[in-house]
Image (cartoon, rainbow, N blue to C red; front, side, top):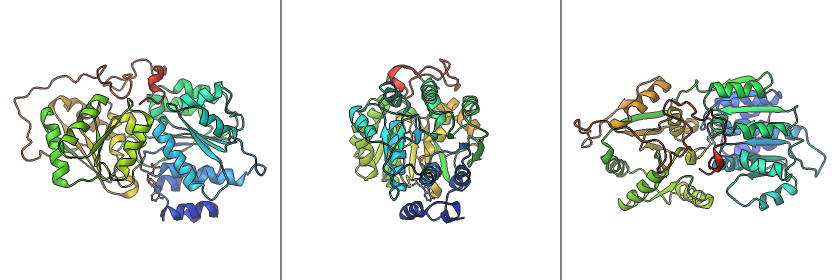
Length: 422
Ligand code: AMP
């Protein structure tokens, strides 16, 4: 199968070729023809599968086939994402794949000034990529007209629900035309996703690439048992011994991310932290420095790291295991992307054994355990409960407990914190 057989126009094929893609990924192969038939889809695809091109290319193709009057631009395609980072990345893909087509697109998210967005929207846009909160601000200020949208994409819908965006999504849906094509992408299937898709999609075609809740095959996973107090020492050892140049490290809390980043610097390893308490500019800079190889280690909380797209990221380390098992799948999905091999390591202390058991249950396999020489856990240390609420924050606004059940019913937005503040 080649991109040529998928029914894309020359301008798109040229853009794809410029990216160096030879063959469509499985999700692209499955989703593109179905989307071009104007069907709704429910796609179970994790980041790293090529899903962004999987919806962006056919969206651009359809917009191209049904061109409006020359020079007229109104919002015809709307892409909703849970976080600013993901919105930016999807927008970049839209611009990249659409570079030989005449469409105008912009990205809209909170945490930055609204006026430049209003100015951009006034010029007339064909494609808008947005996070729900700020989009609704524009809707209520009447600075965006969504009445001509005929293409709606919800990207990482599971995460939008996790973040309490359901009410915002419903409000957005209320101002969209009834007649439209809708694509729903989600890494995991839950009851809530099924409910949303039932209410939103019209006889959808199911597109599933990785089996439900399974972590990608090409990722080598390993557990390094270690005492909590020695995790930092072990991490430094692994980075230096392996001469790792680009490592994404996950911590459970924002405070923990800052502290670890500072400690690594003291160990002579360049590092930056990204989390919801950092300004958008600081996050963008940290990510750019990491991508450019100026810092070796990026320490991140789950939400901040969501949607980070770095080609061929070779190492992901769980400095602490997530208490929400699905986050493990999302985290390790940062490596081993689009066919490249990747390695995901988890430094696990005795306190985290229950989290580990839940993760192994979810991915339906035992992860290989390997004690690094000189770092064997002290058998006399007893497990202590892990505090999950308050303090430095859990990077997810604390609306879930360790059994993965929403505590507040999952419907509330949870104040400003879930409007892209992470
Ligand atoms: P995504 O799942 O959309 O986050 O994409 C993951 C990565 O795969 C991105 O870095 C894309 O540039 C890359 N990618 C997307 N489609 C292809 C393809 N057909 N061949 C090779 N790489 C691709």
